[in-house]
Length: 383
Ligand SMILES: Cc1cc2nc3c(=O)[nH]c(=O)nc-3n(C[C@H](O)[C@H](O)[C@H](O)COP(=O)(O)OP(=O)(O)OC[C@H]3O[C@@H](n4cnc5c(N)ncnc54)[C@H](O)[C@@H]3O)c2cc1C
Image (cartoon, rainbow, N blue to C red; front, side, top):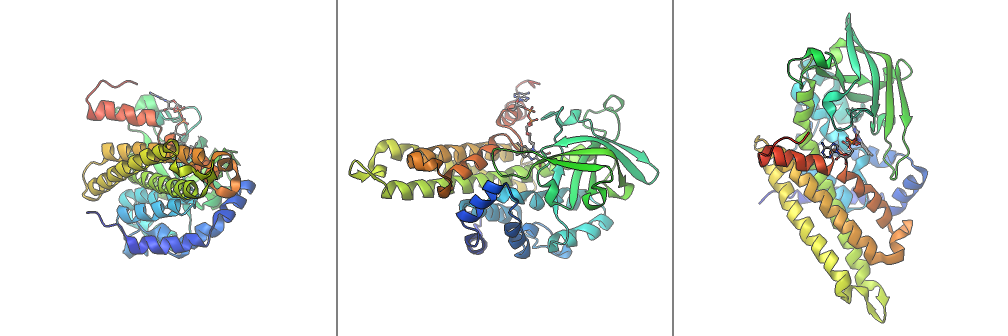
């Protein structure tokens, strides 16, 4: 039986209680960043859960981070405001030099530096990451970066960005996965010096942006690992990302199910609680079963990841099934609430919009299915 980190969950729940629905409704309305919530999580050390103790973090396993994020979502808050800080530092931790780790990790752990921005997706390449066009060209002891990223979430609320850029033209590499490199960009220095950020309005409050690089200089010392190997470094962190997003979806599903069952017991129509009708009960019962099954898959993926086994298929399945479970629970919840499901004060419509993202990001369902078809079922690659 996996550890469920009940003491951590309890503390996270207490912290979340300071940020009730009204707080999130205001932020949502103003499309404002929940800075107070992120600061509280940082001060309590939760965003440094995965940073080793030697660098000032808590040195906890991925399953603890999953428990923290699941609890945040279950309590009606939104980890999307800061979850990347937990997992993108993994690329630095696993592939950075000792000097880079000394320079950045203690400050990320203390909250002095925020590493919230992850620049991978580009407007013209989309899911096909290997076609990305942003170029970093070596010039003396720095690289000059030109290009554009899209959907770089939290860029306006981060000091550092983990950037994936091409350092060797695509037609000059032997393997298609070569030629991309990862950099730590200090956005405080770069903003106005070749870096500009443009917010994107979205259906939920997600602080996502487009970022533009116009002769932006990055010191060569900020290259992580070896030049040209960046795609592998990024991939190695993606399983952790998918498992943690899956845990968030389980939290969302539990939020919807609690909300819906409480409401269904209370709301009287035709002289009896609506929850007495099987038409209300069955979608909720089905979503509950989906959530429990997906939670087992998350547990399985965590066990594989923590044992150091290849968790690729499990992490992908966990993310897909958990995103489906949260969506099914959201659907059943909004239907249970009837018209009131559309009123902002119940938080159902906000969470419904927020959880929809996870069918698309960080990887869309079709691409997970293609991965399983090819790598697990051995079918021919379809693209
Ligand atoms: C709110 C938000 C926040 C995000 N945050 C970040 C971030 O912080 N950093 C970052 O780098 N990215 C981020 N992303 C980007 C996200 O990872 C991508 O949107 C996602 O990977 C899909 O890429 P795309 O939007 O370019 O879709 P496309 O690649 O254009 O795909 C569009 C549709 O076509 C389907 N499709 C494409 N190719 C195939 C195929 N071969 N077979 C079957 N179906 C296919 C896809 O599944 C999808 O449904 C974010 C996105 C959003 C919306």
